[in-house]
Image (cartoon, rainbow, N blue to C red; front, top):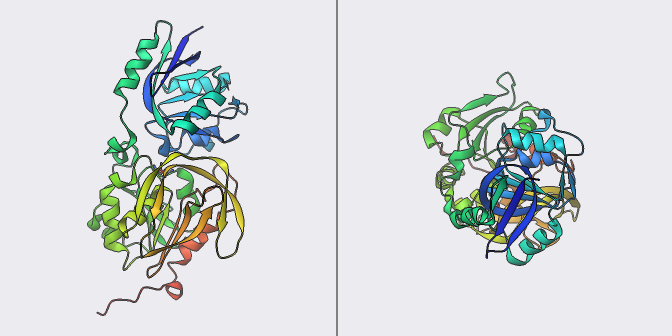
Length: 358
Ligand SMILES: NC(=O)CC[C@H](N)C(=O)O
């Protein structure tokens, strides 16, 4: 059996079964999702994290590329109670270390008590506890990954839905899930996916009907360029955001964000719409949250478990954002109408912004 050590912040070392070899370090988090492991593993928002699956069996319906959210696995390593051979082969093929036969109830309890924490992993025939502790020693705090957007963004603008004749969306790619792009293209939009550090001139060249800020990894405060872009365009262009996108919009409009203890990661997070009282189940993956929305945004939806903001609307501007993932991959699909509401903002009849005098 291949040796496998997991060193937790504070120095406690767990031993498991090595499934895919290598060393890794990252912020240790857990997801309670019982399905959607392909979508989670390819979600760019997991960059620089080590993902623990609390559901005990991962990989039981195989690995199919059509369910991937990006072109690679993003977590630095994977922990589980039991990983199937299918999922292990996939992790191995991308050099992502994996450990199973762990008591993941203990790991999850540690994260709930201590918060998302630094972690070091060593898996291989000759590795020792010290190798895992050395990885832990080198692990950076998430907010110190100041250029994390560059690790997950496109380098150059890519256009999707070129033949569509609907709205034009400028999507600032801070690590966008593919299904966000698909959800817009399916609604007849042409989506220009721009680098995370796109300039005002880049956005002006697209002349979008909607400015959309994607999900993505790390601390929203580190996305200075995207924050500046929202600030520069919000008077004239409707703005939408998902997850990191909501946090960036809040930062741009005088709100604040903060790190949560262990975040929300799973597929059954209950969210209430404050106007209708309707509660929907949502997919989530975030460790930061909007703390104060500021004067220009109002909270329209909240998480039923802890009252954190799940949806924001502009008070004076055309803005809608969601903290959860309305693109619903892996599901549930209760919130797909978000994309209709976003594109409806492009309709002049719905616009609040007063056109500037010529
Ligand atoms: N999925 C996301 O966009 C995550 C946003 C941010 N990185 C967070 O952890 O809160």
